[in-house]
Picture 1 (tube, rainbow, N blue to C red):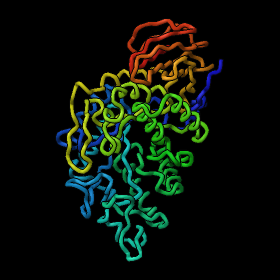
Picture 2: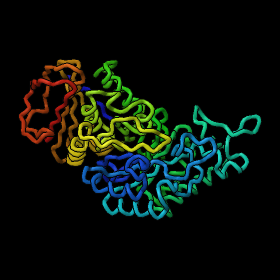
Picture 3: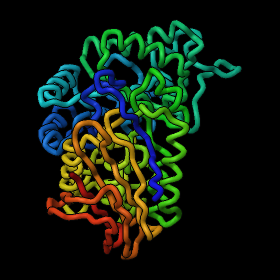
Picture 4: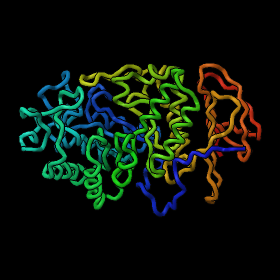
Length: 441
């Protein structure tokens, strides 16, 4: 029997970890401060922390919270990503004291907090635009933008003085405010040598800081030294297409096989079914995935990487949030996923095989006689304890019958629902449309 091992993570000595020790079993949550509460402030967001912690979330990624530029501002409130002052707090969200109180409360409850860092560009009315050579300009001396981002001005990383000021600003948030790391916006647009230099400098003082790059194309070089985690954009898009009937199980396995050979094994992939860009510009997870939402939420937990939850996914938000205006998330029990995510977070926390590389276990394909079934195992091999997780997922809108070849995986397991089951060598299941089964021991 051929079992195709997709070794996204390595079996490294846990005394020499590549990432912060606290990150391996973590789940990350993206906080959209503006839309998370009616008030849209850090003071109001602080009240959300106990429920997020109870759900099993460990890392809070705060979207940019600095003052937003006014020149060519988009909409009424503007984009988080058009920053006019790196070392200040947007009064829309409160004061510096409000953020520090939020941060202290988060730390007290066991969270780590990382800040969304926009190093690629500033607002056109930033004081930095007054410094010669700090931004790109056209032949007429006008500030230059990228794409349709007309509310920003692109920074010139050929200027060493600008680089040093950028690092100084990052230090301000670490040294004076006390955050735990950065999620770096469009990281691939910024020269990798800057990230290597800046993160290397910061890690001399903060060796346990955590860094996330919004990029996948340059993941191999970005995660060499600068970043712990990268965006699983390609996997996300394949998930959408499978849910829409445009791709299938073989496309998923092909992705993992390619990623295993093109991205370093110790790099953490962030797995997600939504985020601020996807929700606002490409549609809610319900729009993109339909009845497959819960299945792919679970999928993000059983494949190698770190799962991410976006603001509103727990409470049942099901509309595209306005990006430049106040637009409160929905609270709708019909769409709420809090219970599902709580069970998935607990599953991840109690099974080391699901931890991020290089602590977790390789993912192995389980042979199935039905091409619409994604079946995989994560199993410890010779590490002093027996831990196995098996996932069986019907990636179609039709009821399916499947028989799995579980040679080497037979035995007693617990279902995610808590029931005890005996899995046999030739194990058959009836699978409802877009349903999944997860077994652990």
